[in-house]
Amino acid sequence: MLVTVNGEQRQLEEGAVVPALLGQLGLRPGSAVVERNGVALTPSEAAATVLADGDVLEVVRAVAGG
Image (tube, rainbow, N blue to C red; front, side):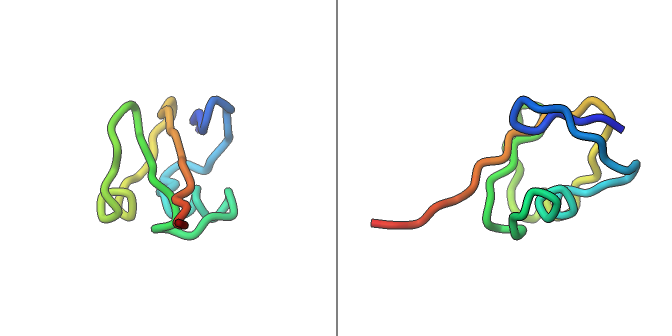
């Protein structure tokens, strides 16, 4: 299936979940905020969200600092 991640199309296996996508991007679950089709996901929602063909995702890495 095809999804769009941060403006770029990406091929994923059917039934892929958000944590698997984050792993492919080199990110740990909880280290990024994920928006799916214009709706921000809570960490628990992201952990359980199965992606669908055509989804549009924005992934923003959380950075702490002072």
